[in-house]
Amino acid sequence: MEEDIKYLKKYLHPDISLEDAIKRLENGEPVQYIVGDVNFYGNTIKVNKNVLIPRRETEELVEKTYNYIKKYLPNANKALDLCTGSGCIAIALKKLLPNLNIDASDISKDALEVTQQNVDLNNTDIRIIQSDLFNNIDNKYDVIISNPPYIKEDEEIMDIVKNNEPHLALYAKDNGLYFYKKIIQEMSKYLNKEFIVSFEIGESQGYDIINIVKEYYPEAKVLLEQDMQHLDRFIFIINTQSE
Image 1: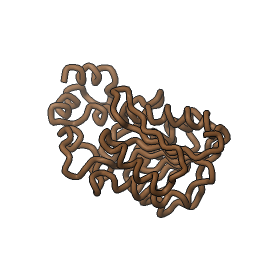
Image 2: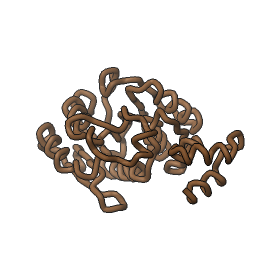
Image 3: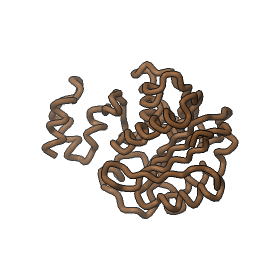
Image 4: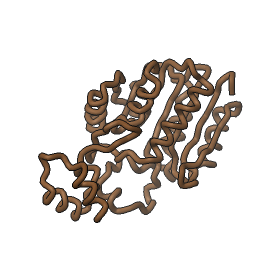
């Protein structure tokens, strides 16, 4: 609590009183929602109860994806950020690769209102699409990146997350694997011949997702990588001539 109060004192917007902010904090609201924005990869990202709070692991997803694009697919032209939420991934990637045309999609209209605010705030040219995964997608992409819902429906998580962040963006059926299965099963129609697919994953899901990938893409290079806490957090599927 003490660290959160320090954070409030430093970043709280002047139209919110510190007294009211501390009451909200004491009632279990995340400090990021109270302040209303966070720093993500050097970009200011607005957040509210309709979107997940961006985390350090997702910054690592962006960083690793950027490095793989530079290494394996430097001429990549189009990318899709599935389950975009606040739009933080799409915005950060666009800032790193200005020539990359990025579409950002989400099923939630409320989330996409936040996405639009962040796209405008960060002066980025990103196309926003309301879509249940690929339902309204009509392009082919060199890169698909996603941090989909992956928490098991019966999994215990911190109260501050469970009680505040949108369950639509947190939980997934089939032991948390539903969205990975669905994306991997359907993505071939939306990928160019050479591609990179990047996922953020739950720390115990890596080998299950690799098995799903191998069923549909037996020839692709599949990488399971750890975050800075040495937890399995990322899957990369790479299918390029240079891999």
